[in-house]
Amino acid sequence: MNYIWFNYEMPILEQLPDPFKEAAILLNPFIIMPIGWTDMKKKSEYEHVYPELEESIKLGKPKPWKEVMHETGIKSYEELAVALKTSISALKKEFAREDLAKLLNYNLSKELYYPREDKISEYLIPGILEVLSSSGANSFMYSDPILDQSGELRIKDATGLEMCELAPTEIVITDEGMDYAFLSVYDSFITLFLSKEKKIKEIINKNKWEAVICGPETYISWYFGKIEFGSND
Image 1: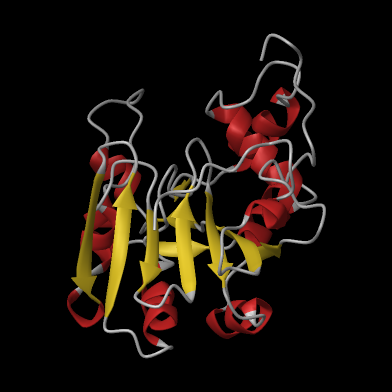
Image 2: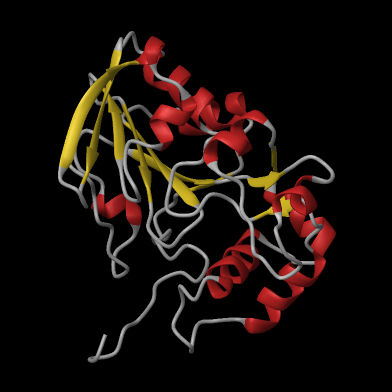
């Protein structure tokens, strides 16, 4: 299965390839490191640090978006997504919300870091492997559209670190029977989850993932809805 580039003009569900019928936007968890990790990691007061994958897997813990919303005063998943994307300059000026970005960054604790950007979160991997194997699959396939690479790995042999390093940014992962697929999204902090069977809510609840289940009007720009681009875009 090749990577899917979802456009902004049509809802996600209208762009799903066969055999998928349902989709959800999984929110990559924030990363919280042990007390003192940031000071230990920094070589100077002004240095910006961020956990390497191996560090966040071994030492870090996931922190839900809802908890970050409570601590920062941000009121919704949508506002938090806009705050994050504004902070990394992933939104055009007319869509950016510097007020939300400041609210987020001012209230972040020292050991709390943004979710993994551009990639499937390391904290989602264990659940993803369980979902991929739930239909009896022994292997999963992956495709990286940037480096034009693809391959197959045995599910029981795959590690979280290995899966996160399969591609630098965009990737799609699917089981042998294409019952499920998971995609990273560039300049975002989400993982797209596609399902052939209509039980996506059940799977999300079982894994305790934070998610936005796609409805008829859910766009890839789910934090705004449909984005109307001008002639110069």
